[in-house]
Image 1 (spheres, helix red, strand yellow):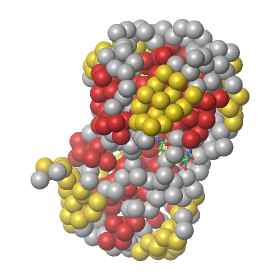
Image 2 (image 1 turned 60 degrees about the horizontal axis):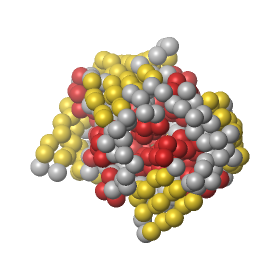
Image 3 (image 1 turned 90 degrees about the horizontal axis):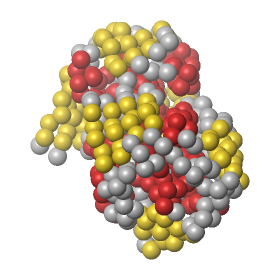
Length: 417
Ligand code: UD1
């Protein structure tokens, strides 16, 4: 078992460079099979979610080569076989193979996806979208067989602006006959990145990044070269770490516009920030104002930064509130922050945080990916030693977290016990 140990209470100084976005990468890799030619995607983060998707590609007889930060995918010899339950369950984003295989072969067989236990995480909107395009969906226990004689463009209204459903329907519709319109589409930057990739391959997608996406089906997709956008959630996590421990900390290679909601909340709290064209410089303060946040779909405050942000709220003077509106089970970090000395109560979907509270190192658990990021942020701030277990969640989403934090002065290690 791997554990993470942090000797906290140290100032962090220097530059952290942001990697490619996990949530874009996990859709780009499955999307790459829509062609029969070689595609190169650069700025791919080395995280375990990337490895898990490459293992699925290998099972499908797709040629995959890694070259430093790039991945070269060649699906010329690909075989459309069932994706095993073990592989489907390794990560949530395995479900993008459903849309991609359906789009390419009009047939996909795989199992209900895994991922963090932050809520029920149904896939009904994905399946309804596939059905609207003409597919039939059968399930045998956890196994899904999605099949179509023909895929034909359709008007699809999403009841919830789901990131996953928006991308999956784009993947299935890109080679369908005629025009597909997705209304109430999610607007996250990762969706724009996937649409750009598909368009570079020859797709005809317009409107990505708005709530109406139009896709005109094409017969053929070819090779391309593509770059993953910077990870706005990794960037946001380290900016929050900077507000806690930065003296000063520069977070480099990011797109500040993707972080507007976080940056404006940090400013409201009184965090000194210098925002450049592709960086944020952050200096910790002793005293912060309490701020309330409510998670929302993009461009609202990202649910994925809610948990790390709680750590900052523990250092604010007074009462802060956080309301979670996307996931029903996203306060699992709270008992562990309280064990470190925080004063947080959760009622319904709102956490009330009373601060400031001194945090002192403890044994804690990373219950999910972003809860794990909150534990790292708290451990860096806390006096003494914090030991985090279940760190495989953290390694799913943060590339070289130990190296990046060590380089700016943190005492953080991973041990095998
Ligand atoms: C993606 C992100 C995740 C982020 C989330 C919200 C990836 C790999 N993960 O997850 O980090 O927290 O967006 O920004 O990109 N829903 C349904 N039915 C569906 C699909 C979703 O009811 O078929 C609900 C979900 O239960 C949830 C809400 O819609 O309450 C949003 O989910 P969605 O946007 O689909 O999240 P993911 O794509 O799974």
